[in-house]
Image 1 (cartoon, rainbow, N blue to C red):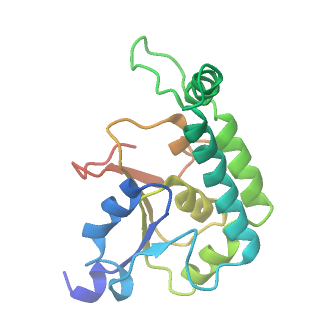
Image 2: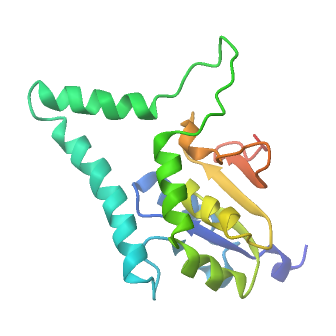
Length: 182
């Protein structure tokens, strides 16, 4: 394969080191050799930056709040329940979107991520994202090329999967195996 055909937009997010660690080995296929951080790229609109910061701050607040005796564990337990990864068995329909997924989708309908996806769309290379939100942004805004989402964890929450998985064009891969999972 020619070198120019190997290039892709590699997108990460500053939402924990796992997404950065997963993106790092992909930098050799990244356009210009650079990984783009969806929440801190050069020229990101202030409104988008604030949405990213708000999402991260909420998660980090609850995570730190866990250290408060009694009520901290209770608050973390509630958040953990929303992120719970259900067992495979018994088999059942787990396609219902989570509250977080619906909230993020509403933000995207209101323009969150539009700037990033429009910028990438000027040179619509294959997109490889190590965080689900940029992949969802690309799908929501009809990104004209393939969209891949690399799963950084052993298991994933329902929040990592598109609102309508059967209609989604996002392809999922586990970072340790690179086999298609969806």
